[in-house]
Amino acid sequence: MTAAAQLRVYVPAEDASEDWLRMPEASDDSPATWRLGPFGITTESLQDDVVVVHHDGERFICPRLPKLRMLEGVLAFHNAFGDIGADKIVPEAVAVRAAVELEAIRMDEGEARSHILTSQWHVPLRWFLLFDPSERSFREDESGVALRYRTRRREASRRLRRAIRALRSVGMESTTEDMEHLLDWMLEFPPNRLVELDYDGVVGLFEAEELAEDQSCELLWKAVEALEETDFDGARRWYEETAIRWADAMLLAYAN
Image (cartoon, rainbow, N blue to C red; front, side, top):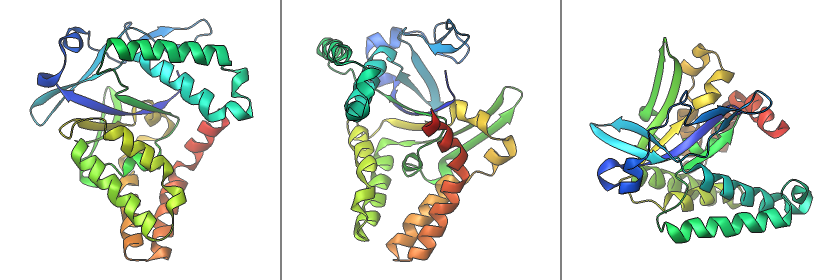
């Protein structure tokens, strides 16, 4: 399992289905979640379980649904890179079978959808635009280092729309496609859902001091605000400062 960050959408426990409430709770060191693969690499178990957090005195759960996410990932890879050789890794027959299995899951469970997006080796910069810098939480203790942001879906989608508008207003529509896909995914969930960006395994790529001082979210919002004021030099400066911070991690992702 490579180092990865996750973007999760949590359901208030009171709104969760009985099936989800009966699922075991996942944890990073649980045998229900991780297992040792044949080459000494830890891989994600296909057992369904839930990630549980408490926020503002409320309990939230995020269904991991690993098989559904795996099938979605196989199809996304095949469809995105099929014209440049992805069919050698995911043959057409495998993609068709994955599509059939995915449709069967969705037919059986009307609410079945991926509540987790995963990014290998880095945090995609667009994810930061779902949050306000004040929603950042950093922790360093004997168990390690953790860095995350949390907000409600209604706020996350409002902020992302603002960033998209800022880019469009200065003729940068071509840069918003991935942001629009993210917005579409977010809008599949009700406004009261909890959205969490968890650096998760990516924290291992940085020193604790670097993470403590990481202001990626704040810098990107400074770039957006500069665009809104047509301060292109300022927008470029703030964006480049953030991109440089993540450059090495992004190179790892693209190299893999």
